Length: 214
Image (cartoon, rainbow, N blue to C red):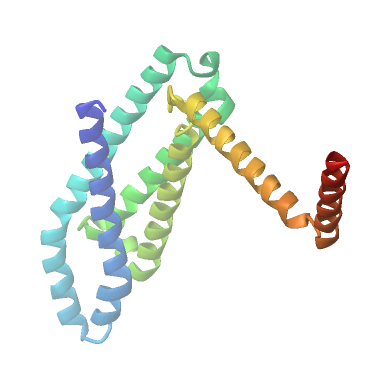
């Protein structure tokens, strides 16, 4: 595997883990806990969290955008250079449409994630109902993750060449099965021989011996 592609994928996955993990923690652990304290204490805690969490949000968004776009461009170049499906793989799988939907959903999620930790007056309406917009942002990120998995699944087949020994292995397996079936057939024939048939064979052998003696 190309080290550059591997590093980009690691960066993308790790940034997504940080961003989504923070959303899950804030929505289902932090907000319920803060609802039990007074307003002044709650605002003070939110401000302290904002100062510490904002750099992580900015870093995660930057990594997701940079690594995601780089991965997309490099993957497009690979599809064209290798001529997947005669160059029509992207159209056949609607890959560009899926990427466009994923990118737009991610941009909306980035906006809400930034607004939730921001201080601007223009985004105060988001922070006025943190539980609601945290849930919306979490839903958007889950949709992005599901689309990412779908897109990844689309190209796990065409770019995986068959092994050179697949034909030999299949032939060997087939021969083994035929041998096993043949052995089973012989055992069945032997098991099907009834005592009466064995008696007739013994009588025929005795008769043949008497005729030879005469």
